[in-house]
Image (cartoon, rainbow, N blue to C red; front, side):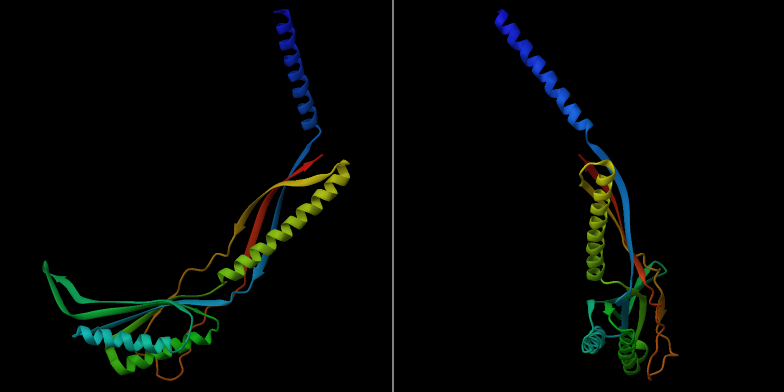
Length: 238
């Protein structure tokens, strides 16, 4: 029985020494936390704009043909866009608690991503030519014309800034180690990415004042936008 008690005492004492050793080793560590930020202005490379074309006629087939004709003309410009979806429905309204219908309406929707500002004028010229052909049966709205930075350009710049931030942190770790007489290394990095904020949308509609000749629509200002990457960096020095 005495032998068992002595053995248990040895284990307890051994455990106390191990805990004390771990505390001493941890005490020798120096932990440093720094905040870094890298920021760079980028020039927008995409002119984004949304176009909605509306058509109306007494006949459903004519509405479909009008939209099809405009869609074909726009696609022939070979410009980059998303959408191109359309819908055709009865032109109905409520009058004195009764639903009344007369003719049909339809709409086309596009979201263009243009490389050059002059390309937007080509789009408007195509639609204006259709207006001359179909008259009051069609109208259109242009919205959200603004210069944006492409997703690829933003992501590439974010990666570049993050790598620059790692180099800055490594340089700081080296200098901190020299001051402390220890060897410092990066233990953690937490990034906070700030992307550009875009301006509110601008709208303009087709009017009878637009002429068949060259169309020069208003051009949004092409302003540089900032991409910012912040990071909280943890260092451990031994």
